[in-house]
Image (cartoon, rainbow, N blue to C red):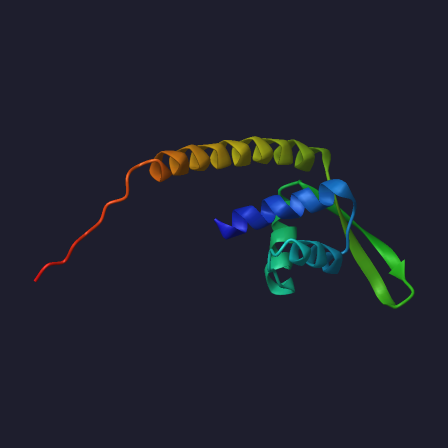
Length: 112
């Protein structure tokens, strides 16, 4: 489940602007989604292989060229589908929790 949520979050970040992997990690950490490079790179590669992301190399003044990722039109379509699925899931859990919260609490007495 966490991997799926991370993939969704990566596409969400890249839907705003192209980003270097360390920028993606920083954005995810800002919203308390803890992720490390060892987790991020395989997900980026998987999304690239699925056609949801592309990348380009940019020269850097601080070392070797950097790989910047961007979301593709197919990635935007997939993100739109994920948005719908996410909203449906959140709504379902919310309704379930409302029903559970409205039930009277059960008290268990342990008499010996």
